[in-house]
Length: 143
Image (cartoon, rainbow, N blue to C red; front, side):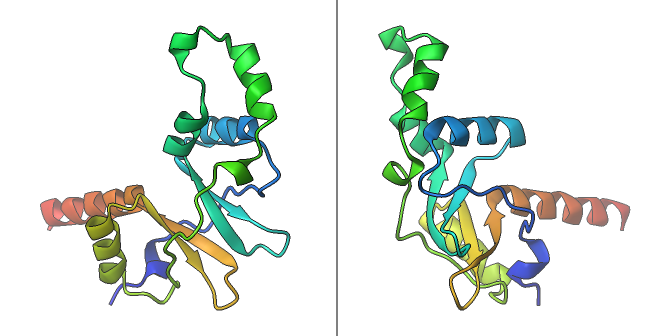
């Protein structure tokens, strides 16, 4: 049986709650990611910032704010103020099928993967399942 550990992303980009919104936006743009786990100094998972959270915290383009001003505003907002807490997590030993059901049934975009001490070990995203699906379809085609 496949487990979360077999598919999760282990090379993570994280921030801490004192880092600012400007850093989060830049990290998402540079790394082409939509979820940033927030950890404390012990690497314990404490929250999640999503692309949607950043959009929600951004002043509307209708306000005619120039990018430099938006950057200054973003630099003053700690991600701890916009991060989501109480996020569902899984262990790396969780069955992949169970994790897939969690993502699908609850409409989660990702599942942070933590150990017994709540330290972040990885993240499982919808994109990871798309990659798996593509691999399986290619295997069937080449079957």
